[in-house]
Image (tube, rainbow, N blue to C red; front, side, top):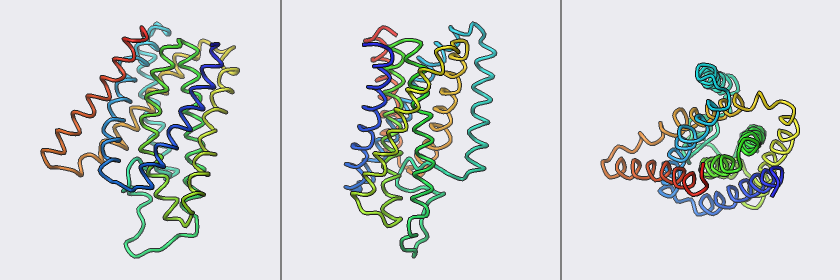
Length: 257
């Protein structure tokens, strides 16, 4: 397949798979399952960043300091955006920014609408990340797409729960999340054509994508794990994080990354 075909397939498959899997978990509302997904997603994200994306970006740029500086700037950028917008993407079923008051009822769709807008932008950026990775190397693109899918599933679970709280029906919540997921395809295709003439930007796009993954894992996902303090939970979390890293490593070995 051509690079563009890989981008289209990965973007479509990633978005639809994430929404479908999230619907399965969210509509069954099993909190324990969501926790398992979050731990695994952390490992997949960090594994993709440190085993594949950053080494590739440094190799392409030939300047470790420039790539590292871009990652640092990216982390500060994502922190600032999250603070200013206060559109916190929920990665589990208890989200501080969107947590409903104890005795509140539906909010007539306000938080749900805001969530869909923010999630659509997030999916668009994911498409750009996938395209940049595939344009460097098909195998790197596959690893990156898998890591994005791994972190999208627990996020989409949180999105479902917020939409249901906002008064949407289960079918409508599924439809809105599915429509939002197509922004990944739009971002991927646009990035493919835009980056064709800007190859020198590719390592820094990869560095920014690494920054976004690090930020999501460290700032959004890991704090939620600390709420479960029992030794059994801790061991389970560590094992699943390692499993997520191992998955990325094995995919890299199998595809020759």
